[in-house]
Length: 532
Image (tube, rainbow, N blue to C red; front, side, top):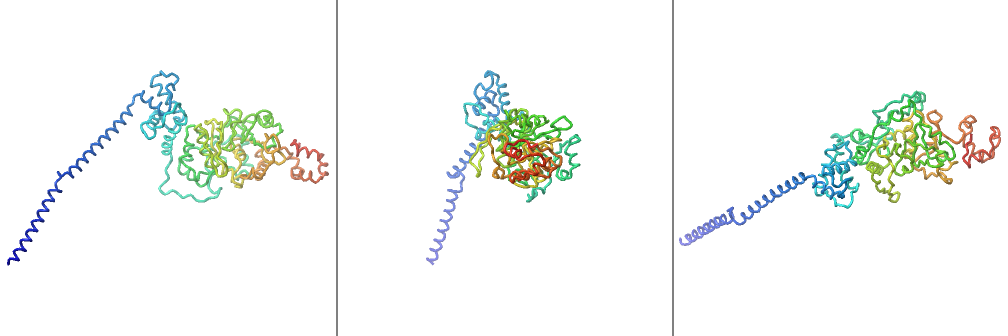
């Protein structure tokens, strides 16, 4: 009986202790007034206050930046761009006039075609000093490069907005042959009214008729990169025939640049009904030819590569230059006598050439060229008037390569491209200095005799081009200047190779029959005298 009472007493005691522990724990940890909860609440209040203060401070800073007076704006721009205190002609000009001067400096680079003038200064200022992460270190002098670097960032943002986005499921790029896809046409094409135009020639020449596309697009415009369907078509081929693997934004930066004039050249060369053009190559066949006055008598003169015309060379190749075609490695624009009146045609054969063209339009030195095939190379600054620069369309290069050169070799020569440009821009084309001939030195400006080597022409099929020039000449589509008597050989069924063979084997009877002696052939071979 006693034992049962003790057990019950112990049970009641344990229940009481547990109940007491529960009450104590609630008192200690359940109250929001405990030190722990007071600390957490206090910290949350402090963080909230700090956050509000930061928002107010940031808002205040932005407001103060946006509400800077004109003098403070000028001081900030001077510090960031390194403008001297007297960068305007008169340092004591009113702040408004100085801001106008800054606007003119910026507009010299950006232009006002794509970005409204009233927004340009605000964008530059916002980029330069409202966003502190992009502030540049001050310098002692104003440098064009600083303005260009910061302005370029704005242009990239605006250019990306110009690019049409691809559809949700864009068509895949298929592997195609050079002649598989249709060629882009120029909507602004204007046919020539000359009765002897190439359109009329094609009507009488079946050979030309099956090759000639009169309205193929010759020069790039911003639509070729901004419009997705056009860009997608050009993305099937790599340079020089398309934009595959190229940076679309970089190409858009070039073609949307305010300095780039992408107007069509069709029907703009001359007010004359029929236009005569001369295309001048660098072949040694011109050396001592005395064809300079004849060349200059044409309405327009096309030149390529190292187009030297100074001094005594003018008597052989003329002085005038209307159009000059080049790419980075072939740029000799500094040697052209009068670049103010010259239109420049630029060909892009590789990725570097796109960046090169961008720098031309920005009027800054070309970028360093790095390649596994050669040492790093810094091209000189081209002497090009940027407003007169046009970039050859990849489809035009593909058209010339497939329709006339049968897609042989890696690509056509720049000389071949210029001949076909002239055939699309002119009504009569005469070419000089074309068709490599081992009897003559390599170039007309060589001081000594330079022999032809296959290594020099590894990217081109010069034999194929030589045959092409003769074919165009025989079809009456061009006139090919040559220092041998083509009509004599044609009537006598004797080729130039026969002349060489006769000279080597001393077959004199045929030469005697046509009253031409071996001595004459020798002088022709060694001294490049005219055969006729």
